[in-house]
Image 1: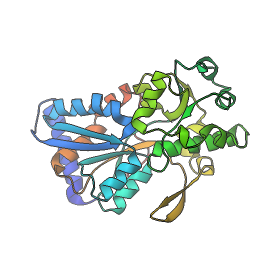
Image 2: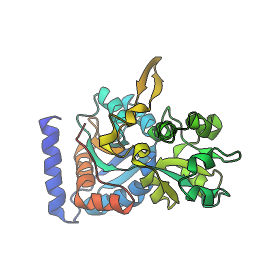
Image 3: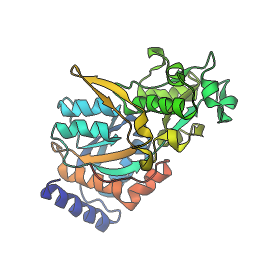
Length: 298
C-alpha cells in the first residue's frame, strides 16, 4: 500500500472519530459490493455513513466476481469495492486498481430453507439434511459459480459434505444443473416466496433476510482459517477465463474492502473503508449477522 494512501486512511479515520456524528463533507460515494450484502449495505452501513459524514451514498450490489471483472475492465466505475473472499479482490488487484484490501467482516456457510416448503420440518431437523435434499421433488437453488463467489462456495460446501458424511456423489446430486441456478439478488427472495425449497449461502445474508437456517459443521462451513490448508483445500473447482483454466480452492469467508485507485471521490472512499472498520461500522455488521473481519490485509 502506498504511503499516501495509508496516510489518507489514517487521517480519515481520525477525522471520523473527531466528528462524532457531525457531517464533515458534502460529497458523494459509489460503493460496489457483493450482492449478498445488499441489506446490510443499503439499510445499515450506507445510511449510517451518510448520516455521520454528510456524504451521499450509492450502492451497487451484484455477484462479486462479475463486479470485479467489470471494474477491472473499466466498464464500471466505483469508489470502493467490498468483496467476499480473496478471489474478486485479486482480479481488481491485477488491474492495478487496489493497493491493499482490509478485512472488515466475516461469515460462514449455512443451509437456508423456505418456511413455506413442504420439506421445511425435515430440513429443520438438521442432521438428515443430505438425505432430505436428495429426495425427488426438492427444489434446490444456487447462484452461478462463474460470476458469483457464493455460487462457488455452494459447490465447495457440497464437495466437503460429500467427504465429511462419506456420501460419494452427494455434491452433484444436490447441486443439479443449470435449472437450479438463479441470479444472486433474487435467490433468497425465491426462498422466502417458496419458489425453491432450500439453498446454501452466507449466514450473514440469510439472517439479514430473516430466513430459517441450519448451522453446518466447521468442516463444511468454510469459516475456520485453521481448517483452510488441511481440510477446505480438499474442495476445488476449475474455472476458465479468456480460455485459460485454473484450479481454485475455498478460502475462509472474509469480506474485504478497498478504496479503488481510480476512485472519483478518493477522500470519501478512504473515509468509507475507515468507517467499515470503526466501532460504529462493526456494530452494524454485528446487528445484521456478520462476524468481525479475520486475518490480515491482502
